[in-house]
Image 1 (cartoon, helix red, strand yellow):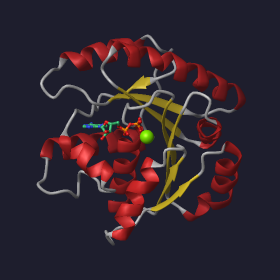
Image 2 (cartoon, rainbow, N blue to C red):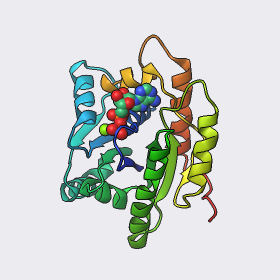
Image 3 (cartoon, rainbow, N blue to C red):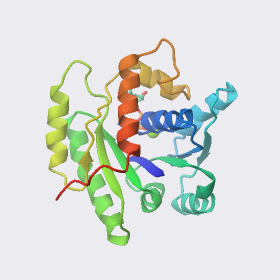
Image 4 (cartoon, helix red, strand yellow):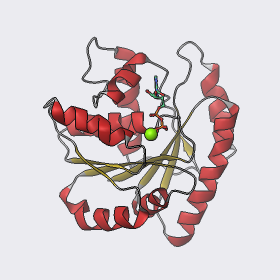
Length: 221
Ligand SMILES: Nc1ncnc2c1ncn2[C@@H]1O[C@H](COP(=O)(O)OP(=O)(O)O)[C@@H](O)[C@H]1O
Ligand SMILES: [Mg+2]
């Protein structure tokens, strides 16, 4: 399956979730290719650290910030992998557009602050554009960096996403936890780091299952 973790907004957790999901799938025994579509190269640096430390399972990683290169490489190499996870952002990013044309699923992380929720409109417009040239793109929105103490974040986020018909809201929020930032930056997954954070582990597992379970029914317009 090809999944893009994308949002034109920065700092919402695209790289953190892309790295964690890619490694979690590798731990399930899948051959995973993580593509870094961001000029800043945060995901590729993280996976390079993982490689240097010899941590198994390995995750293949490449950086293509240009849409044409990303498209060409994915078309050429996609049969070699079980899953391809693309980390892409930037309002005018050709990589994000190219990634969306090739993806089965778009996962849009957003943070529980109103301006991040509004930024969903930006992504909704992109989803419309992609759906005008191809069928079958599933688009999910997931709350990231939610306050560990407050359930109201979820209620507000769900209501905001319900306004944007392009997205299905995933009821598997990821909360603000040190385990996620520590893991992502080191090229590790929260399933691997010690001491174990069982809340982070169960949040990531729930998200992984929701995203990679294609049996979910579509949101009705
Ligand atoms: N669930 C989380 N809990 C704690 N820190 C997080 C979480 N998600 C992201 N972060 C931190 O927030 C910052 C932005 O995340 P990042 O994944 O780099 O966002 P993006 O790729 O969208 O710009 C990073 O410092 C990251 O470690
Ligand atoms: Mg990033």
